[in-house]
Image (cartoon, rainbow, N blue to C red; front, side, top):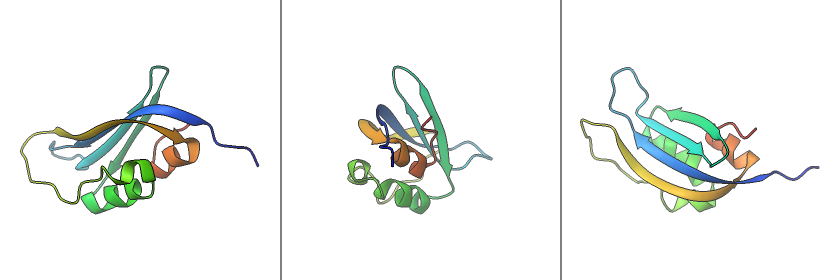
Length: 93
C-alpha cells in the first residue's frame, strides 16, 4: 500500500449568501496549486465532513448567525493527506 502525500494547505471555510448557491464552501490552496472547492447544503453536512479530520475538528462552528453577506467562517494552514482532502470533497491530485 502506498502512503498518502501530505500537503501543507490553506483551508478557507466560507458562508455564502448568494441566491442559488449552496450556503457553505470549503476551498484549499497552497503556494503551488489550488485543490478546488467543496460545497455543502447545510452546516450539519459541513460539520460532518470537517469533524472527521482531527486537525480541523476544533475549528468547526457549532452554529452560525444568519447574515446577509458572504463571509469567512475560518481560515487555517494545515497539513492534510490526499485522503483527508478527498474526504472533504477536494481534489488531492
